[in-house]
Image (cartoon, rainbow, N blue to C red; front, side, top):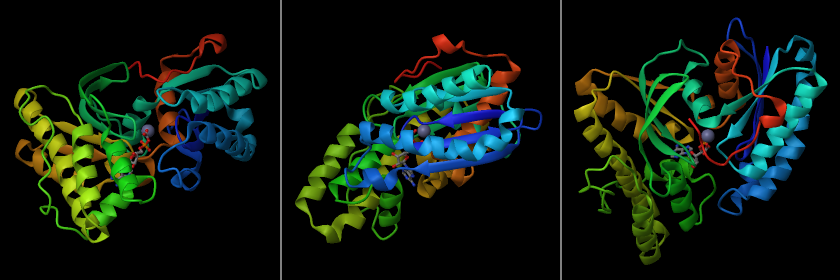
Amino acid sequence: MILSIESSCDDSSIAITEIATKKLVYHKKISQELEHAMYGGVVPELASRLHAEALPKILEECQPWFGELKAISVTNEPGLTVTLIEGVTMAKALSIALDLPLIGVNHLKGHIYSLFIEQETVFPMTVLLVSGGHTQVMEVASLKEMTIIAQTMDDSFGESFDKVAKMMGLDYPGGPVIEKLALKGDMNAYNFTVPLLRTKALAFSYSGLKNAVRLAVEKSDEISYPDIAASFQRIAVKHLTHKLKKYFEIQKPKNFAIVGGASANLYLRSEIEKLLKPHKAKLYVAELKYCSDNAAMIGRVSIEMFEKEMFTPRDTLKTSPRSKL
Ligand code: KG4
Ligand code: ZN
């Protein structure tokens, strides 16, 4: 079995996965959403302290499996440096104490493999990753062959939901809150401009839309918030589907997946489904419980890495805020 640790942002999570069957044997996650809610976003130092409390508590429950472990894996990039270090330090300590090899896992690969925790691996695949830190389209041929096709030039998709929620004085994380509020509003009430509509570039940008929403919020009262939320969500998703449509003119989709925390958004899922229909492409999404950050997805990647002997020596395993796919 492999014990996997995730602490790249505001979720402390540990999983134990059986190598031969790829089966998830144990999984626990302690989220810090409530603690960060009053700040409208993640406060890195607070997150780091909360990981230092939560991870050892979860680890205690894993003791019965210690004798069966063959490796320790941990998210080491990308993420918040001060929170990644909590998981990496615990992983190194365990690797010394139990004399086990270490596997450093890229968090984004974790999101991709969240698709395969409970279903068979499907490659090649076009992947849309939408989270709090990333908005990327990738062509994924295998664990080692991932090409970034498009990414955001500024804010990410999930982050824009968090910021819009904060403008309205709503809770963090903003994604689920805005999605729920949008159900009560008219999505055509506000005609926000779709970002990068006239540029050919396969890229994303959410800062302009965020500022347009800010102006609308400042000019209106709470009664209009559901309309603003619905209109914002429509345009935020339209931006994704517009660029994907352009990309599908060059590269026809076959297997298409949406992963990352914001892949839980049902409006996004249904708009992507519509886009895929004429191409007869299949849409893959992870189970809702595996969309947001968790160690089960890190465990799933580490099984592949274990089989390919992709170990990292203890003294060279470093954290990085950036992703090296
Ligand atoms: O993948 P994740 O848990 O953490 C990162 O790796 O960043 O993603 C969290 C992000 C947050 O920005 C959150 O607001 C967003 O995903 N999110 C959503 C929804 N649920 C979570 N965004 C839009 N709609 C949702 N339903
Ligand atoms: Zn994530």
